Structure formats: C-alpha cells, structure tokens
Length: 389
Image (cartoon, rainbow, N blue to C red; front, side, top):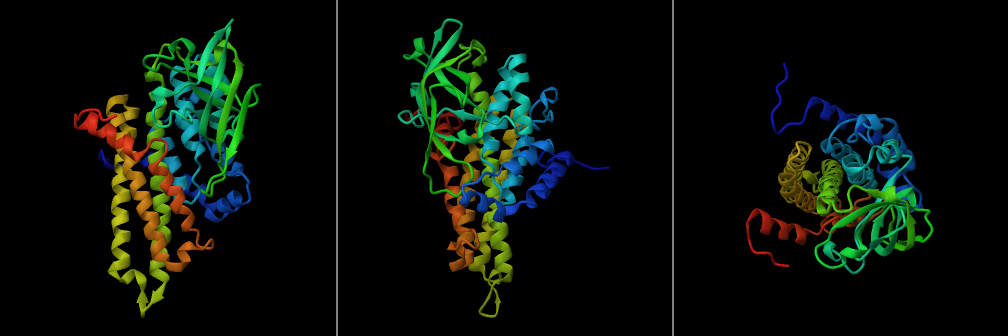
C-alpha cells in the first residue's frame, strides 16, 4: 500500500518526470548549445516530445492530448530544463495557447489547432507585449476592427518568442471601439504567413535556439473564426493563459536551477585543491546547500500553484503562480551564480557551459512578468496595501 500526501506528487507524475528526463538526457546540454550556437533549431527534440505524448499532455484527449493538467505539462518543462534542454516554446504553445483554445475555442477551432500543438507540427506563438506598453498590458494599442464578416488587425508586438518556428500566433488585441476605458482584450489566431504580418529577429545575448522577434501587423485580414472566445470576454479569457504561463516559467527556472546545481555539485566532488575536494570546504558547500533549499521551496510553491489551477481555483492559483514564478527565478539566478563561482575560471569557459546560464536564468526575473510587478501583486492582493502604480 502506497501512501500519498498533499505535498508529494502522484506516482504517475513522478514516472512522467523520469520518462521525460530519460528522453531529454539522450540529447543533453552539449547537443542543445551546439544547435543554439550554430543558429539551428531543436526540432528533433520537440517532435520527439510530441511523438511520446508529452507536448500536449495538458490538452484534452479528443484533440490528441493526454488529458492531464497544467501540473503535468509543467513537470515536462522542468525535467527538460533540468537535463540542460530548456524549451521556451513549451511555455507558449501548449500551456498558454493550448489552454486558452481548450477553454474558449469553438469545437471547430479546437479540432483545427489543438492536434498540431500536441504533436509539435502546429506550434503556436503568443503575442501580448508591445514596445510602448511594456509591463502595462492595459496600454496595448494593437487594434482589431470589424470588416464585413471578418476582422482587420493593426499593431506592433515585441519580444515574441519562436515566431519563426510557429505556424500561427495568438495575438492579444483590443477592439477598435475600446481604445478608451478599461482593456477588454480579444484573442486572434494569426497565421505567420498572412499578408501584412512581418517578424524581425531581435539580436539577443542569450544562447538559445528560440529567437525573439519584433512583430509588425499592418492591415492583416482575418476571417471571423480567427477570434478565440467572446470579444466581450475581457480579462478572464486572457488570464486563463497567463496563470499557466507563470507556472510554466517557474518550472523552466527550477529546471535550469537544478541543472546548474547538479553540475556545480558534481564539480565540487571531483575538483581537488589543497588536498581535498573543494566540496569539503564550507565556503563552497554552504552556497550549494542553500541553493538546494531555495530550489525545493520554489518547486513546492509551483506544485501548489498547479494544483490550485487544475482544481479550478483561479484566484488562489493567481497568487501562488506569481509567488512561484518569483521564487523560482530568484533560486535560478542564485544557483547559476554559485555554479559559476564553484567552477572558478572554468565557470566562464564555453567548455563547462556555466556562464551562459547567467543570462538564461536572469531572463526569469524579467519575463514573462517582472519581479517588481509580482511584488506589486503580492503587496496589493496578498497584503491589502494600496495600489502603487
């Protein structure tokens, strides 16, 4: 007889983690960075994940998915990163786009888009951030106006991940008559080969196969059924995707943190200076022990957020998802820094692959929502303090 507790994952979830780790381990960090530095893609791994049923594990079975929850896809994301193969589009395609379409799409939309998201052949990007609006989503200016039976979109987006690998982009816009007053976001699926849609790559310092893009949307004409959900559905529809985004971002960070800590720990056991392995010295051992504690705390909050979301508690999940994302990003940044320091001079060589983690983990403090905005959220909603912005 096996006993489970509220703070442990099910046997099925733990087995899922083992299987994903085994699959990703066949590729590994060296393979991943070689692809990234050569300007190549990690499509082989992406399709392998899809073929094994892990990519759409959170999407209903009738559309090619696994019928699981956000906690399952977050586990997949974390284990990939923990093997040194963090796939950013895991956050975007199945978790954000897949969740929103599963919840609010018509039957025809689900049949059209979800199977490709599940098997990896129809990846979907997500576009919300704008050059002038930044963190203030209420100031987005991308607009949609009715034109006969369809829509016409105009606007600009920035830092949109993986547009070159996506067939479609789920674009957040506002209807033309809603330029003033509170934002009522509308969600449109836009083909990346649509007339008037242009994407330009943004040079980044991060070593990643997934590129960032500035997107230009000029009089892009869409059919009526490009609209996902109700045009008056408001923020509820948008946040159906943003809570999973935060949960996935947390898993992405904890996975990277685990990878950094594993490498640092292995090095500290092997590297001998002054007679003993450097891991015998508290100045090396204690920071790594501290990272292990911080990572486990962040993982536990991430699992709580996923459990609340899968139970339908969107309000509770919002607080937990924000806190998980914050804690995971902090843990990852610290783990990467400590891993570099443990390696000494080797920590800043390409051979050991630690220095690249500094930028990769640092991005977690900025995206998909900054640590400062999370602190604003917690100040207001958890502590009841006055709104500061």
